[in-house]
Image 1 (cartoon, helix red, strand yellow):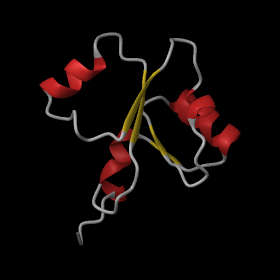
Image 2 (cartoon, rainbow, N blue to C red; image 1 turned 120 degrees about the vertical axis):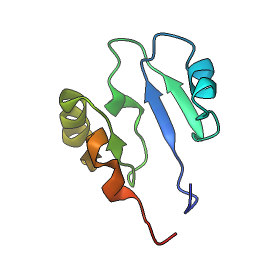
Image 3 (cartoon, rainbow, N blue to C red; image 1 turned 180 degrees about the vertical axis):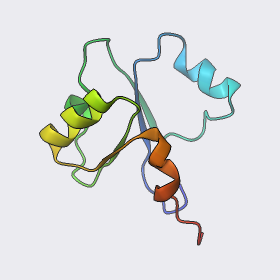
Image 4 (cartoon, rainbow, N blue to C red; image 1 turned 180 degrees about the horizontal axis):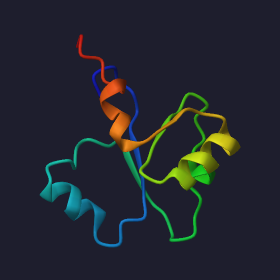
Length: 86
């Protein structure tokens, strides 16, 4: 956002994700939204070598880190990724 970094949402949200994002005023936050099936691996959808993953699932973070060799973060760690100088 503040550095023109592309932000992609990979989600298994069971409802209408666009409506949910609109409801919380987050609909303009993401550059792309990818709706995954229940059994899909997020690692299969990450193609950028410079990507990071922020996810609440340890299992998902571990799989992505092992398969894609990219940094992964728990949702509670988002604040440390913010550049407060901007």
